[in-house]
Amino acid sequence: MLKKIIRIATRKSPLALWQAQYVKKKLLNLYNYTLEIKIIPILTAGDKHLNITIKNNIHLHKSFFTKELEDAITNNYADIAVHSMKDVPNKLPKGLGLVSVCKRENPYDAFVSNDYASINDLPKSAIIGTSSIRRQFQLNNYRSDLITKTLRGNVETRLKKLDLGKYDAIILAVSGLKRLGKEKRIKEILPIEFFLPCAGQGAIGIESRLSDIETVKILRQINDKKTACCVLAERSMNNYLGTGCQSPTGSFAIIKNKKIWLRGFIGSVNNKKIIFDEKKGPLNQPIKVGINLAKKLIKQGAHKILHEHYL
Image (cartoon, rainbow, N blue to C red):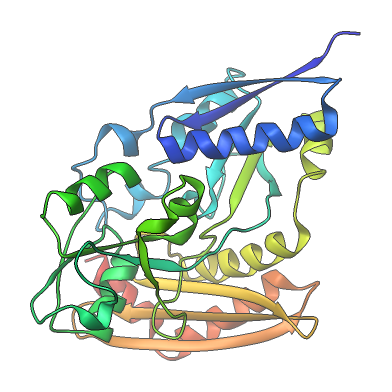
């Protein structure tokens, strides 16, 4: 009997390739005798243009790391795409869908430094690197005496820049460091009370053609329902607000006492104003929970802050 072939489109970064291999292994554990899986590395716009500042171009960053992968699926060059969920736009191309979300790794942010044990140990005017508007805002809100500078590139590139002495510390996702075997570089896991993650951080999503029923059915077998529920609530808040990973927003959901507990914030970089709120709701209504939290933030001025950010 011929094996079914599934072609995985992925970015070329070491972390993206790790994620593709992770999905491949999970699928083969279930379908070892009936599947053949091929990994197709693809260069995305986000990988090609590492020096582009995307924070003020909302149209560009919506698909900065995903468009080429989605084109590969649409054009039948690949069957599925494996993404970091934090990079996936709120709206997907027609005919494509997120059909599986794997169990989440630690979703928090990590403080990494060669000289300091924690963010509180940094001296005044220390230079801390991150490419994330969300992280920059929360850093400034927590310690306004620090100097935040933009830091782009894959995990290895960012660590190398730290090691060359260009920064006193950098902020990276715990999940990426753990997946690449660099957990020892973590000096401190930043507390959620002060550093809320972005929607989907730490989760791996799998996108495919919705018309490919057989592949969708296979991918559903590695979907983690709890992670998918939490990520859907987080993304629903962002979708209603019209924000993404390069907005000054954070959202994070957990399941507690058989309910979704979603926390979110939006920050004004210009006047250092922060709006934080939370919402709880039934497990079977993650979209509603996300929308209701977004409405609470809007009532407190979220849309005005977003307008200022994208001017």
